[in-house]
Image (spheres, rainbow, N blue to C red):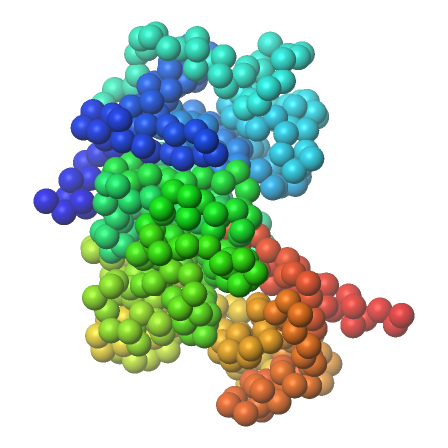
Length: 532
């Protein structure tokens, strides 16, 4: 029976309980020298759920998890599921204001957080935040701190110990259609939105992604840099729980360390965003490791150029697949497979996963025929219930037939493969002509001196918008803006080339590896407007 069929009707709690029963000694999580089995994860999650229930946390309550990539994050996911509560996974890199917004908007009653991370003292931070968050009743901390100054603060390990062996009355038998997670969009434009995802949303997509990759028990997965992200929550954690694969965790991604982990653990599957693979290429060139255990990779989260795809397959990981992933579709909505022709694997984001349908729409919402360029719209088992507490935003994004309008421009070819072109709102209108950033970015990435590139529109009195290429050069490379403009002019129409080229040591990124294009455009506009 296919994995998708076996997962049908399951909840997240059932998924782990089933794996812990059939394979209790199987290794689920690898973190430093620590190995955590499925059975140990099940026992810890059960104990944590019992302690949280004793505090009065119950079905439907929101529990925020603000942790880096470590076993406590996965344990918390399943403890929340056992309670019938709603998980709110949050990025530990958020600023105080960003964190406050999400905790207040989600109405979280409990937060599970690291004590210190990136020189941030979270105990101190929450001491300041708690008076502003009337719904937040309890704080659970992961770390070594022994000094407690508030009877609402508990240590993670203490709750595990207190709950071990304690029976608790869980919620009535949950349906897979019930809300499980409130996942916030990265918010590169406008305010972040809370995406409501059910057990079925996440498990169906996780199973479909795992099947496309060929994930099986015994596989070891590396490269997941954000468990708070929908891909980390779904295909990474839940995908491994469904299949019996092991997930190798790094508290914070370091390219060289990740390559060392691949060699040490004999990792077989590599997930990642393009920036992860780009950093690893540099690290591998500086000091080569034995990466021969890798059999397949999967890139998601942002476009990868054909040239970068070729380099990754040649130097890091064979059989690199591509996924088209959105928070609103519980991660993967389309994916390439090993059986696809090479040109489809390199130049498309694959075909929709089982049960998912994609349309290409004209501006007026009418459906376009194959090979037409328009906005992609999607419906399927992974589609969100809606945006939490934002009914107008929800109704504006989902049409009368239930299709979610992605805001992405693309083409659906005759064979059903999706070709992404760019964002609908990301189109640069230069002197009346449309410029799609991805087309220019692909050309820039093909230059041997370019490591990363992002193209944004800059306000211009004459053109309306000028095209600005923001470039991170390859370490040690020497290249000029005029050289890159000539490089682009050799294959692209003049209006599609960059008017401005700016060089950076690193591009501003979200926690999920996407370029903060609005911030980048503001930085460049501020630089151009400064007379000094």
